[in-house]
Length: 173
Image 1 (tube, rainbow, N blue to C red):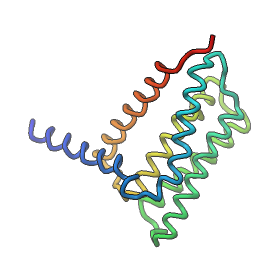
Image 2 (cartoon, rainbow, N blue to C red):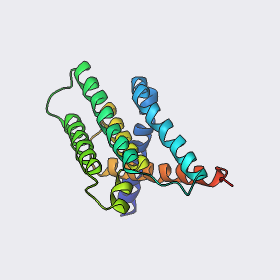
Image 3 (cartoon, helix red, strand yellow):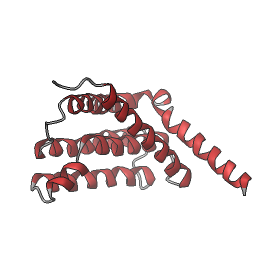
Image 4 (tube, rainbow, N blue to C red):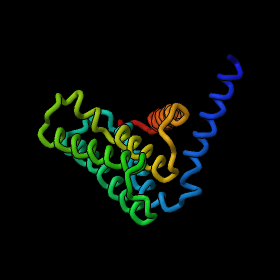
């Protein structure tokens, strides 16, 4: 039992390293990944400083378009590298397009209560989703229990970075 858990943990860590090192191996992904990561960091700094400001529907609408921009880049990538056929990568891209369009429509029509809609379409979760799909497509990673474990680790680290940004950002006033 201990060996099984140890092997499982090692596989998760190896998958995590594979995903995290992807931008070093696939440097072309930096062109699409960098802008939205910088945007997340700057937005978190801004809202950490100005806590009284609230996100509005227009911001949520813009956030949902990030998924569409990333999807277009991923379609370009699959086409250029002759990977544009039915596979897990293309399925992930179309799922991302669907989520982006669906959230765009929900945000545009204010279809959800603000306390739900504005949270679902906030910058950090949508950009994290885009980042995960981006990493999985560029690395051609299978969606299995190891990948899910690696994504959970990445999510915790992402949240920790955002929390640290909140702590170190000087507050207004």
